[in-house]
Length: 309
Image (cartoon, rainbow, N blue to C red):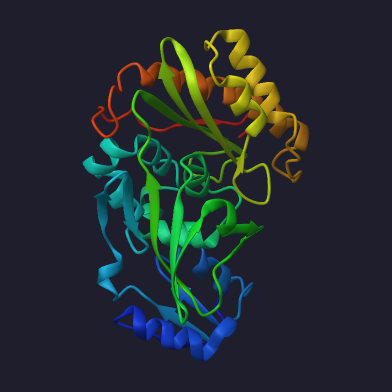
């Protein structure tokens, strides 16, 4: 199909983009990488009056480490993040998860800010942001807002970003010392959205898990943490029995969607298994990551194919 008619604007600064968003409000759509918006246009699921193409605002594309944060400009291509030694050293969980986003052709154009702003409930990057307790920087007529992930994602494909605001930066906190992480997902085919995905981060102390974080993708209206399982894991040795119980606790409160790809029961079962495996992998990696930001790059992200896929 072809997209509906629309006006096209290509601002060269954030101020110009904000002026256009203020003028058109909800009738405007922001174009970054276009990997989500263009299909929606072609299927005529969205009919904006104007497309605000921000690709000429070069200052929104960057990777920086500042203090205990990795700052990613909203227009930074996913492929650049994937190949960045800085990201691999500073936030291995992000480096691992981003390899599972679609295919290389998609990551060549797709942006970090676009993925976060689109807020697809099966996307990988929102789960990474949730696992790391990250923030999103938004600018608008009232100035700059820094929104924690818990307040940023407000529902299915919706965020706290107003129609006259623009996502400009995503901030990923660096993992704590002596920590390890892993991102696992199950998809029907390589490159598909995950049926279920899990981001795990553990901190090692004297042979025990001093702290653990778990974030799901694909099992709710947005990224979900697993507070019961996280509390259970704190201070425990990661024995097979403990990891299995953590998987059960993490999956129990989930109410996954049911569709043509998988039943809710299947997604819950897979979620429990992935939690166990992701925790085991994260724990193993924590042994070789003595200090934040100085570890070796992790192995390539792991994706498993669903039965029948």
